[in-house]
Length: 92
Image (cartoon, rainbow, N blue to C red; front, side):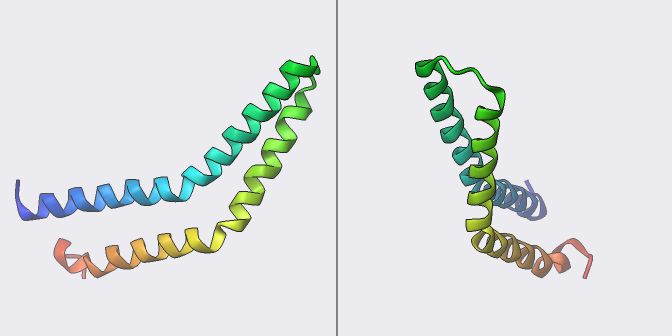
């Protein structure tokens, strides 16, 4: 593989890692709240659809708001690294 191929592979790997770091906490919060509500519904025999959706929605929104600044910092850092490498690809 050439040096350019390795750089493209590194950029793709960094993109996937950045995406995972941004999305994982939000998805995990939704998963944990969804499992908790499902367990509660199974134990109490309450089968209300809105009871499972509303807590997940609030949990996802809450985690997204709490982690907005760190996630934006991660995305900004990744974008700066990409823009600094534009000369390598003949775009600068």
